[in-house]
Image 1 (cartoon, rainbow over the protein chains, first blue to last red):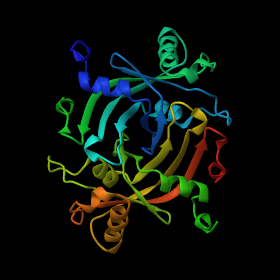
Image 2 (image 1 turned 180 degrees about the vertical axis):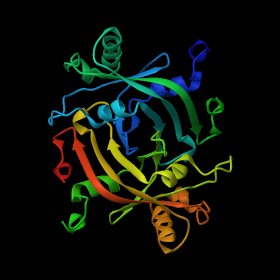
Image 3 (image 1 turned 30 degrees about the horizontal axis):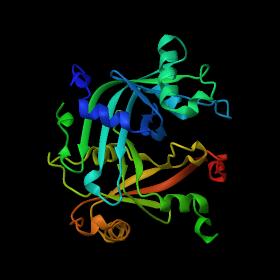
Length: 154
Length: 154
């Protein structure tokens, strides 16, 4: 009960998100060209964190970072697909604004919770790499078993 | 060998895409606000097809259709996540322009191949519902085992 109180996320949405190991982040550049890729993430309060885990070989920042610098509006979708049983399909979509954190206490804490959640990150030198923080503004969700969740009414 | 010849898709990328049951479609509205959701899809040549499978209760077209009407630039990403072994991570990203097909031979053929690929569609009355066709213009791909695929050089 406490988990969802005063949050844009309902308790069921939060539990579903916390149970997903990968989500999909959509960004768009200044011209409105969209981009989407899989991301590992961690949720803390009403913020979703992701970390960059390697420097691109090109030397240019990743496309998603360049897009966020041009246009901070993003969507993160976490979903479950079940090829055998479409009544198990479910998704939670988070709309919000993204910030790039290059350093500082929030950057470090985000990487700490990401390392706690993904053992692969523990072997990487993440500290010099930026974190993406999404401040969740709006949530919609849907389930194949029951259509829109209560959360979709928010 | 023949599969990739003269295509924007390499043969390995095509095989990977054909093996995925769900992908993620990113669109953006006229103001550049991105949207992403899971989609069932079928590939034919250098076009990816998706069908709408129900009328929204609101009576308004789905957000992805409204976005495509405003801004036809889209990205479709198919990926594989493996929580145990990140060397198995892989993604193929397709950039292109989307068209909405309301009826006609291409619309009907797209729904035929989608029904062939997903048994759940066979029980649905898809015919009155629109199809999204993405004309693939650019492909990038990446594999956790070997970094960028040959396809990423295209």
